[in-house]
Length: 469
Image 1 (cartoon, helix red, strand yellow):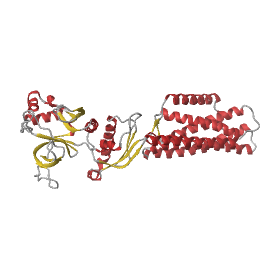
Image 2: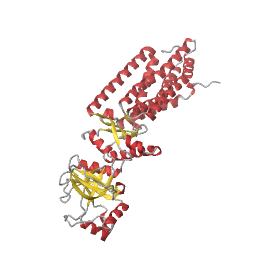
Image 3: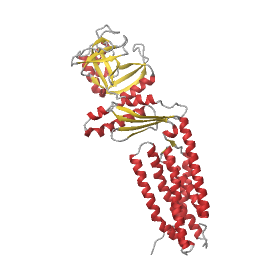
Image 4: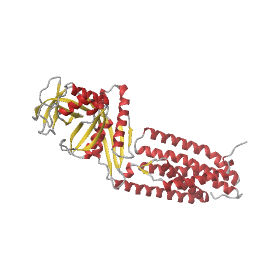
């Protein structure tokens, strides 16, 4: 006994089609589509680990380093308030970053601001200043192996060299938190970043003050207080003088009294202070990163892409619908109805899964139209062959579906494998194309084998002598 494809319950198929249609309409009415960067506008960056740092890393540590860099970058962009960002690893030593434009009326993020936020390594050091040397262009001061000269262009006295100890007093891993605040009259800076040490870091700082490693002077400064240079990625951010009240607090009240007393000054805007605070909170990158590809898409260009994408989809759909009705007549009209259900379900599924629509994703939508037609063409041609061989309409429909099933499944499975490969190894827009294509494959199978078959089952009940195909 041979089992045929049409032996299932018509009531069950009708219920599935009704649920699919009503559910799709409800989802589209309630949900809003998530537009990708190429449709919405924004910034795309391809970052690469600096070759010098990458070569120095042991091979066994490279994978962990790039994964840590992805984590830190994602943390930085999230804390900056940039939503719906994509940060993924792209190859062995590269990172792909997409930052869409925020919803109006907020302006799009500028590429230079994104680079400044992401590329900063965030390596923070606190070093004791031994002496100050005047700046002479082309003639850095001489130092011994236990010293290091760092250029300080923003010194109140003008550009100078700070001669600091080669060994840091503290590093950024002892920072628990950093927050941007408006500066005070005493700080002499429009905006500052207030640092909060970890317990271990605060204890070490207090020990330096108690033991005299760092000496304090009388407020507002009598010239005898030590300076401590705060250096971020090799650049001096500020060089505050240790005052006597800080030393007294460390000796009398302990580490808790000085946990929130360190400030980074010299920040002109709130945005600059906020970015620096985010970098310090997120931790330092394990390797330096450099931008090797940068693309910026404006919102108006994104809207133009949406219009063209909708036009292309509508044109492709209209041509396919007309061809099917012209070539297959009533059967073509049935295929057109299932194809409309196909597109409705695909759009709803993308919204329900919070999938991001991209320009290649729209291309995947158009390709899905073609695949939906392809499934129906295979079925219709098989039915035609059975009719030519002299079978009745009922038998031709049953045998046509049965013999086309294997070919349809095979074509969809091979396409699905390709889509999964694109999704696994692709980045950015390629993933959007693969996502749309993958979802469309399953919906195609459903509409071709359930939707079209249901319509033909209703035709079979009329006992037709001819079939308009």
